[in-house]
Image (cartoon, rainbow, N blue to C red; front, side, top):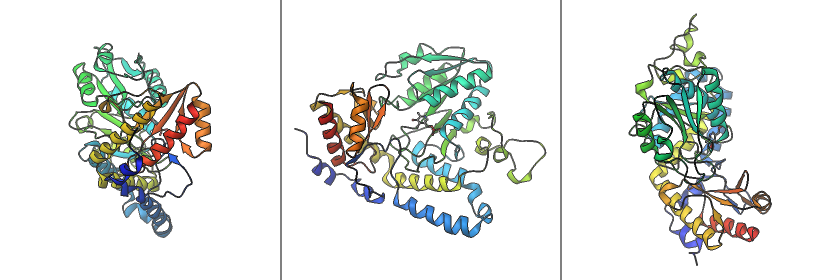
Length: 396
Ligand SMILES: *Cc1c(COP(=O)(O)O)cnc(C)c1O
């Protein structure tokens, strides 16, 4: 028998963080924080204050009182706490999808003599669709990887397609279905050895996996803030460009916020020499403040400690699922997985609907997958135990 969850929760050094979130629902287990993280109490207060005092009270003067710099200052905070990124390389802007579009163009622009973009067929739809779109508009070819869902992209799988034609490789650090965690430093250096550049999508790893973009010499990265960062539905995303590329990169949505002098209203466009050149239009101020609160909570807990709890929660969930004999499509090795575990079942769609009806919220993923997301700052062992117990009952 597995350990009862009460003792594990009592011994959890991060347990107190759960009280920092609004939890006034009647759910048995919220196992979807990897799709939409819970609302931090501090964020509810900050946004209320922003609406009445800053927006309502300052109106247009708010831009001069600090709003203008938020994309960069909060980008720097996020970069330092979550990405291992020195200042001046990260901004908060737009959606992940729009940022992928910009970064793909930026990446291709610094490899003009090469004509292939590499991506895996298992990647998240928006990443694949945007690769196809950018490749078509720049006259590039898409080179598809077809890895096993669970093993995902190893050095061997990637090495087989890299070559003199490779301009850009797009990879998700954690697979959105299987939860497989890729070797970011190792694959990055393999890509560099081939003379190409990489765009890492960190949507399912930022805030829950220690990331070292500068040390690994990553070129470009992107990720969203409404999953493990708890910044709310549609909160603006982040993007990272390594400082060594900043002078050379161009991007396609050259709005006034990316210009050298925002308020000069110049006749001709000149790109900002800083990371601001990746911005486009007026930022979503309320959204960025929510990102800042999410980042501060993670910084306070520490990504290393969050990862420790994630590993323990994952081991606990896998142990319970194994005991019940359910099929798992997530790696067996703790160091090869992110913070969600995925069960394959022929009735996955029906089971998910019944789970939701009974207060356990997982995610269904086509065609037969049930994804259990474990978000260490809010997910308790008791939730994992209760959620898995109901899943096991329904899966019989
Ligand atoms: C969640 C997710 C996205 C989301 O993109 P949006 O533009 O925010 O809709 C993109 N890529 C991956 C890998 C994701 O997991």
